[in-house]
Length: 167
Length: 265
Ligand code: FES
Ligand code: FES
Image 1 (cartoon, rainbow over the protein chains, first blue to last red):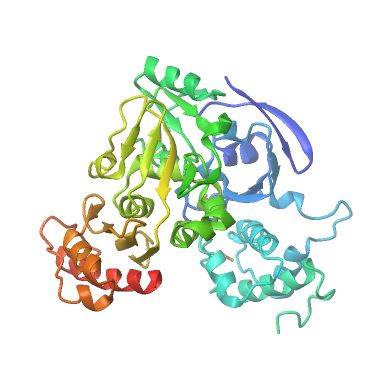
Image 2 (cartoon, rainbow over the protein chains, first blue to last red):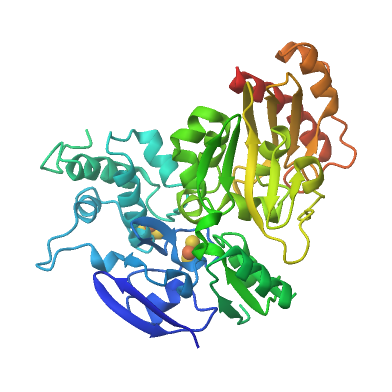
């Protein structure tokens, strides 16, 4: 059986997998990091999005063996050790950008990649298009878009407070 | 998904050897098409040969009047490459408008072209720009490379190494996507090449990418939307399904061609 060595949320792991083991299966079933969700398993919903070497990917559409040597970040790896939320998580909370929360881990991971790729700032259209790979069945997206706009301002140091940043 | 052996060769020669020794082995690049197919058990390879460890398969270069893109170059790299944006802006734009961010972060140009999905975008660009497909053993012109639905001129075990695009003087692409699935219903890529010739390629509408020769002739005479206004795409042989009839797709070809021209300027 193939062995895969990778770093997840800063911790090195070496795990035995099958060739066909998906990255999301490695994360959820072997490492018990169940914050990453599986909504569709057919590359549509984005509930499974994690970062691999800093880029958002659908972990249901990547083999665990393809992550050999990679640096993976999941939703569990965002908050600081003292429990302080990542600005994107804080913004989702502040702007009520979730209802059932199923899509949220993937939304947050996609949103962070989107914001990091646009240091110059993002307008509403870019945020909506940037979320093409993530589906939400509850919120109607409006508050998610507001949360991302607000978090972007904070992440790029243009504001220190989330409140009113999206206005 | 059925299980399979996994190989990650470090060179083109090693990859070709594994693929040649085992005809049931398959190469995997970004896996954004192959993995969904494997999950549906539409394919049952004995082994996957991961091409991501082969450095020679990646990269973007301008080589005189050509743009050379390594087969394993990701959509996101093409979308954001200053070299591509300068040489063939329509190609960078196409890369930025296919799939979603996560697909673009993993999927590769060579993977998409080798798969030749009728609804894929790149085949239209490669066909209209008269690209050359460099493999581990030969060069294949675009007119011979595409052989209909999911079929290409690649032999078993033959690996696509790079795609060479002649840099055009004008190029533009427009597509109509199904609003739910986001797959292309009809797309048209128009290109005026450096030698003055015009090529027009249609994707999504038929069982494979094809050239619209009537439009090519008209645009070679006059590069304008008016020149193709009277041209009716024949619906015969086009795709008809729950998303749209062949007649509707034929109509879209005309509309997309005009939009592509407007994009090309
Ligand atoms: S579970 Fe991966 S995209 Fe839905
Ligand atoms: S909050 Fe329920 S799916 Fe998005």
